[in-house]
Amino acid sequence: MKTILLLFASNVFMTLAWYGHLKFKWLEHKPLFVIIAVSWGIAFFEYCLLVPANRAGYLSGTFTGYQLKILQEAITLVVFVGFAWLVLKEKLTWNYAVSFALILAAVWFAVAFKPGAPH
Image 1 (tube, helix red, strand yellow):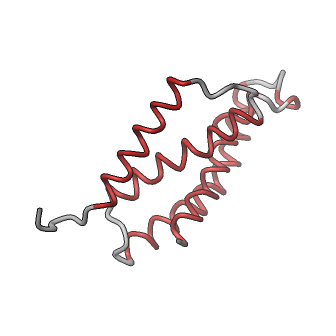
Image 2 (cartoon, rainbow, N blue to C red; image 1 turned 30 degrees about the vertical axis):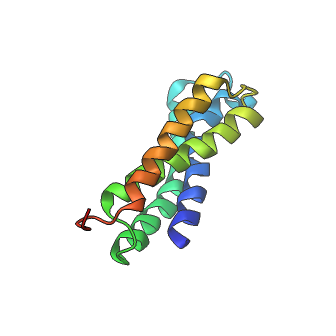
């Protein structure tokens, strides 16, 4: 659970770093290098949460590297859907919803079966 919570928190920062500048009014007329520097500053906090999340999940034996990556991508999408809806004011259309459901199915396949388990 610690790994999942840290991944969620890190993805909030990542989403702000990658997409927040699209709506931050105070960055509207700034040069690109300023926007990149601000994004890097926000991303620093993402890494401060993501690295411990991956270490905790992997070193505890709870998740494999593949499972961590697939979980992280799914969590990224969950966080982004909320961001796109609340901040970017974009609707979740049926094709995005189906795509999201397929990715969630991939997460289930990745974590439902232990590597090397008998068929």
